[in-house]
Length: 139
Image (cartoon, rainbow, N blue to C red):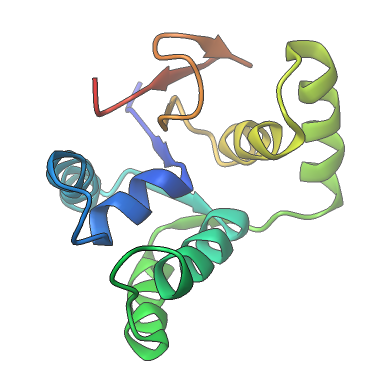
């Protein structure tokens, strides 16, 4: 079985945040590996959160046009479009695993995209949720 990696927003943000230090290098390495192995998955939620955060919330924001270019580059990846099915699945995951709704949306999108791992710093490293392993690449 090939490994399919779902990237949470925080990994993308750290990769493009010039002030993220060592986390930036770890995030960039994880993304580079996914590009080389063609096994990265994102969701519309992740891309939306990424855009808002890198253009407004990091210490050295990225110009909107550059951020749009970065988003365009990810068009070649598998992108899960969060719809009603994803929202309903997330509500069940939230209830079953006692996660926040937004973390449940990440898990639901990862499941919908066929991910075997979620790369994030927001969930417990080594945890398995809905059959998907959680990996914190900064550990």
